[in-house]
Image (cartoon, rainbow over all chains, first blue to last red; front, side, top):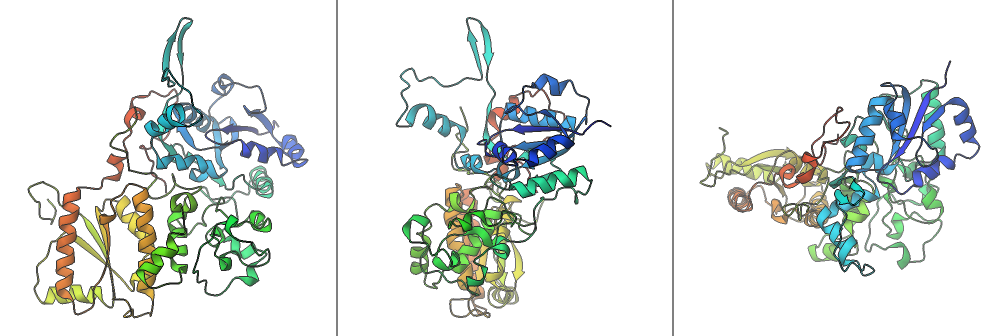
Length: 327
Length: 170
């Protein structure tokens, strides 16, 4: 019997998810033993036309990382959806929008303006901007369209399972591959990680106070962080309370607060709004002015609470400049 | 035709109100039994305490067509559960910062302390808020979220699920 065929693809992402596959180390040999990787642009020389030539559902699984923000990405994931029995959203960006999703606080016109004109390091005397189509002497050349809004993978195609994390932890990838090969997958639509908050596996769990009351929020560089004590108790914005466990509390072991890359447990639809609510509740003041003063220490609420999940949030994006739209 | 009054601008705001059981909801009852009339634009949801209000409820209301959200709780010091209303206040203040960053007018979400005896304040606040939202116009997140060129691009593989710009994440 032939081995199941597998594809890896990346969209709007940093490449860290590809690294995570490489981080499997020896385990990658077991994976390669069990499956045929037939499409992986970052590592193997197969082309889009090879995928197009396949029969529908010929691929057993497509692991897709990255958010969707261009016509090319949208086309590729639609193609992979058609050719695959299972699509797995791999990593925070495909799952919730990820860091690229923070571009939803701006619109395309603003972004182009910053990148091609306003950034201090840019020299662009001729005011050139990339165009979707251009007639060069050699013929017409084209570029993909950039969407105004960054989307999660499941806002574009049907996704069967999610592997969360930035990037997904190696043990979860191995578990997921085993579940696929042994046909032990949970209910479709599931996130392939434990459905319980990170605090549960946090090594500092015993130092977490019953009631957290914060007089002053700190950013990590502002204090000497006690390496033993609960980070919330130290006034740091640690998202472990709302974040799915499964990463082994890697950041906390490095004495840094959890930033929430694993996303919410299944009980929370909108991670950022929930975590915003939790931290507001912890503010140790009842007077309006004092509350305002404490909250002012949270410098960038959107970037902090929605770091990985703005496109998946209830609001999806900013509506500030929507009326102007793109160019 | 809905039960809303249609004003001459043709826009009748939809406001979702979350009233706490012990103070504001009782005040709304009082307004009713006292036959006070006020704008019919508010849909009241009774919650046990304003501290029960998850900001996700507010955003869900806005996402699903509400033009504004009104939160009513007990006056500071009067919370039936000691400090639920303070939690509501802190969450409201932080949520306002986020809404502002997202370009949603802060006036669309309003927090008011209304005691059980203040039926007249229910009347006044609802009338005021209805007027404020009427002036702001409909929220219409999906329409403000302009698709512009998206619709005009022809994809080579458009045959699977089509999701509107901005998506319908579940």
